[in-house]
Image (cartoon, rainbow, N blue to C red):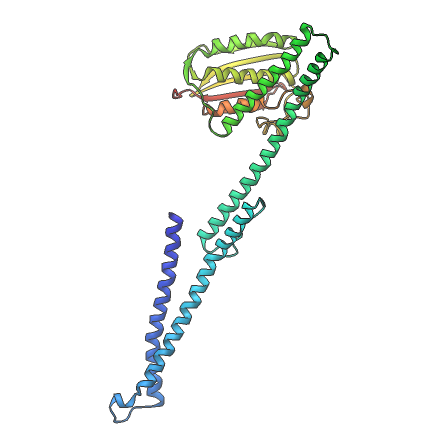
Amino acid sequence: MKIANSLSRQIILSMSTVVLCVIALSVVGSYVFYALLWMFWPPSDLDMDEWLPSGMEWAWMALITCISLAVGAVVAIKLSRRILMPLNSVAASLRRLADGDLDARATASDRSLAEASLLVDDFNSMAKRLKRMAEEQSFWNAAIAHELRTPLTILRGRLQGLAEGVFTPDQAQFYSLLNQVEGLTRLIEDLRVVGLADNGYLEIQIQSANLAEEIEADARLFEPGLLAAGFVLHLDLLERPIQCDPARIRQALLAMLDNLKRHATPGNVTVRLSSQDGLNALSVEDEGPGIEEAFAAHIFEPFQRGESSRSRAQGGSGLGLAVVRAIALSHGGSVTCRNLDNGGTLFELSWPDQLVAI
């Protein structure tokens, strides 16, 4: 509405200027006309009606009218070009975009008309976003196919071996198959959470919960796996009711612990729950090897893996920390990752202390 009003104002001002110029030209032209007649054809004692032939006056009026129309046409053509050129550029680029050319961009050679330039800039911004979304979709499709391929290949090979008698159908084989199925289940759940969060549909159930008790219960269940990998678990949990979706917060904690187990150097692990300045915080701290600063800025994006000890060789879908970020954002909070002075890494999920129950 603001753009339309501004454009209308410019058109009105331009047309008003043309009208004023025509009026001024007519008035000044009349004085010039009579002055020239007086100079080169001075009146005699005749009556003024006899001194000035009516045909000459009409001819002068016709000339002034033609000049005024020419001035108006020139101004109108220039104004229409200023308006139509960027609009035509946007229209042509839209047709290219509709045909699948995501590199289509509009141009505005004359940026003096701010509204048209803003329209071109907005279109180009939309086209860039569409291209980025298409690239992200292609990346997601390839990444999901890659993550599903490994467990499905293992399942197919084991089941085929069992069917053909290559493997003995014992308890170990069935537990191995069950482990692959559980991995697929976690991957599908992570994809669902991240997808819902990206589209703004991840629902959370806010309630007042004894989060410390629930976190301790989950951490203790996860502790045997940490001990087997060489980690020693330490808990520092604030004992008070906290507003959150406890199931989602516990899911985020398990994702952070799983990431730590896969990629961190064996040593002490500290899980801390705190509250300060109106913010609740759940953090997981390890003793190394740290994260490259360039990679730390992207570590919470889906399917991101580092090149050091936190590498692809350690396994994992690359979605765990993306799930942590999705849960943090659904709580109106944020998630951070930073290196510590002792060479370790701190992952922290924080959210406001006052949340409205859904």
